[in-house]
Picture (spheres, rainbow, N blue to C red):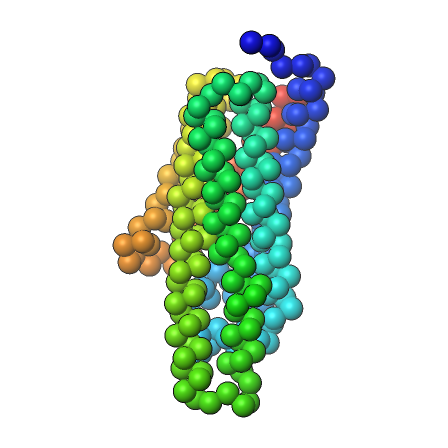
Amino acid sequence: MSKPNLSSKQSLYPLTGWMLILESLLAFVPVVILGRAINWPQSLGDPATSMLPLLAKSEAAVRTGYLFYLADSILFFGVALLIIRVLSNEEANSNGLRIATGFGLASMIARCLGIIRWLVAMPALATLYTSSTTSPATREAIAVVYRVLNDYAGSVGEVLGVSLFAALWLAIVSLKVLQTRVLPRWLGFFGMVSATLLAFQLVELFGVDLGAFISISVSVLQLWFLMTGIVILRKQQ
């Protein structure tokens, strides 16, 4: 089994470190934009009667915020692959890391599916709902569609994409950190805590409303990304 090339390793560490830092910081851009526009994420559970007019009023900001969120979700998979390469020392002999790669891909796909509703379906519903030619009966039907679509896509994106698949990816990666000692052990313990917080969100599948708890768990995840990026950059020096 060949050892990783030194020059390749020298390029892998800086790339991974900076990508981790970018991922950690990019995640807060949609929070700021959407927070100002529609009081996100607290407003995700608001009814269509208040949310759709607000969305129609701030459509440009909402699209911008969710485009950043989409970019962050896609970047997540690239970061997931880079961390796995660092932990495996560029060797592809770990079944656990192969499984982690699959969970990372599943997380990206699920998150993107959840986000797409805010770039396509929700603006269309908001425009139709606020139109002066729309009848009260049609508005009631739109409100039902909004609630069902929001519950379904929200569960796919936030609950499955983040709380299940991302948590499983992070748990495997954190265990690998503890096993390999490629990175400091405290990052492994910190990652396990973060994965646990993400997984706790799964109780929403049983009808428990945790409100904006996901913003806390995701913030802890982004802090893990930031700290891991800094550690990897310093490790290469």
